[in-house]
Length: 193
Image 1 (cartoon, rainbow, N blue to C red):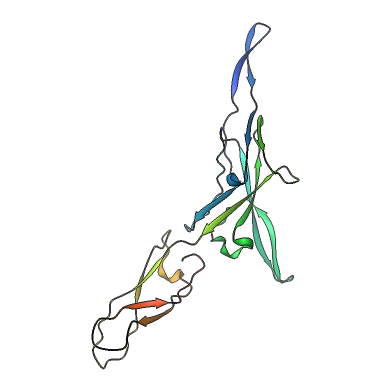
Image 2 (cartoon, rainbow, N blue to C red):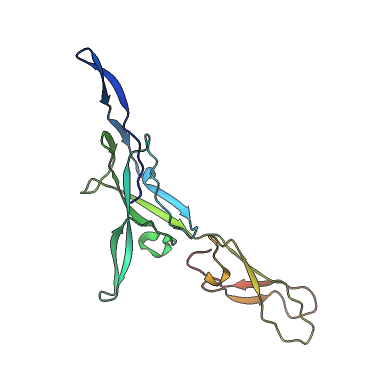
């Protein structure tokens, strides 16, 4: 599970004439803005990072869809493994997370579920990517060549073959002598925009 740890604040108090440590309770209010995060696809797990004063110990679990062939639909299960893929394919376009603050002497106020946990939302957006047609020289009367391309913006060492659908090449203008733009239209992918 994803965790953060920070010792509880201690102060010296006097008891029977001798100093002794006394733990102070820290109280923080959580609102809905604290529980919503947006990240961009990196090809690596995208963890929900709760930022609270004092960095209390907390755990995060992620609701993940699991396709059940026998039922014909997804059922959702909790896992401590952060998601990697963009959230456009899950319910409401975002991952729901369950956050438990486990730090003694730390109180977070806000809406909680029946287990005393907070509900947050993590959106993983597609990474930007550009498909650029390679220049071609075509002599008059020749057949149209196989168009090639380069892909810019791939993350985490991914190669162009991860793109689901590159699309069909189109040439601007009619086939006349001169310079024309080549573009790939209809490209689509689950992880890249």
